[in-house]
Length: 238
Image 1 (cartoon, rainbow, N blue to C red):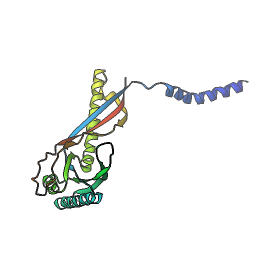
Image 2 (spheres, rainbow, N blue to C red):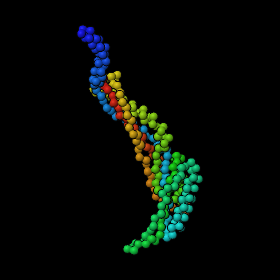
Image 3 (cartoon, rainbow, N blue to C red):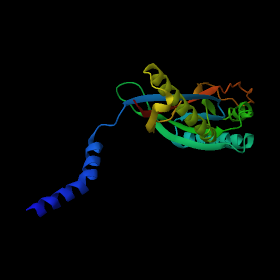
């Protein structure tokens, strides 16, 4: 019997470190867990423009209306490509709608045909002349200025650095108010939020379609704001 108890004592002694470690692992970590959000903003000059054009024709004959739209859009896109060979020119939204007479007995009296054209370019210096080159054929619906993808990618590293620096400074400020020195602050987790971009600056313009040359319009590309938030968890050690 004594031999059995001796063996039990030896087994318990061997398990003592493991039991102590298991008990310590179940204890809550020391210190205070603090959640904080940091943010960064970078303002950049817009380097890309998207010009939206359209042409609309109405005729009693659908074929004539479509032919007129096709001709105008073809001439307009060709003028855009000549004025800015590097611009990305796309057509969109080709549609035909019947026009009805008024009154109780409505009948189709004609057709309205419309097509849109979009030109995307980073050549902002030539934008006024590019737009003016297309306006004898197409109406200008509006111009949006924004940041190009290359500009957004270039500023991403700067946003991350600024957001983390802001987060660290806020943790330090919180620690100071709680009497915790910076060397007792341990960041345990960081989560980056969705990157936000300021809305593009629209420049809405309406223009009459003319056969003569159009005077070049005036544009100001403006600036856009890129934003990034970061949320972190830090433990303030006692």
